[in-house]
Image (cartoon, rainbow, N blue to C red; front, side, top):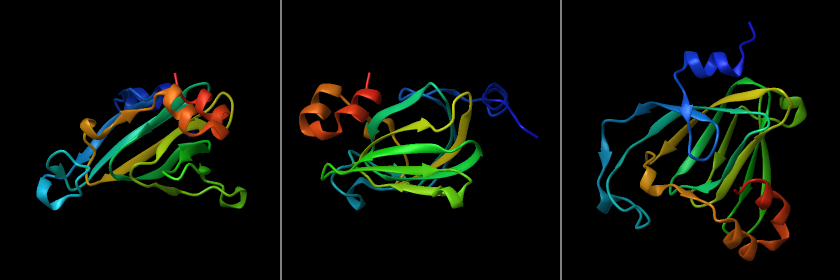
Length: 167
């Protein structure tokens, strides 16, 4: 059975995400890691792990952002999605998340902590439903939206994708 993006948004009770797309947290570990047991980049204690549903429609983008934890993306439904990643050395990588291993797509992808990343849906008039698992768990104090001017100054050779994925 094919479902529309609106059906998934309603059925999964998704809401707008600040980076773009729609999300709902589905899991937050009750156990927490103490601040002194975490790397210095964390400002306080964190849940051991968190998970969300994330839906992105074609014509929309998940804007460049970064977090302080590794994030694992999981493909669930719809068409493939491209994760656009700028690592800390300034190298660009496009990772295709989707069901077509014969087309170079993967069911899972890892975004390393501190990398700038965003996403686009690969097919017009479609969507991608994915999940994201973060460990140590996601906290909005670890979330940073990219500043276009600063990214362009730091990574000028990636100007096209930076302009596409920053407001």
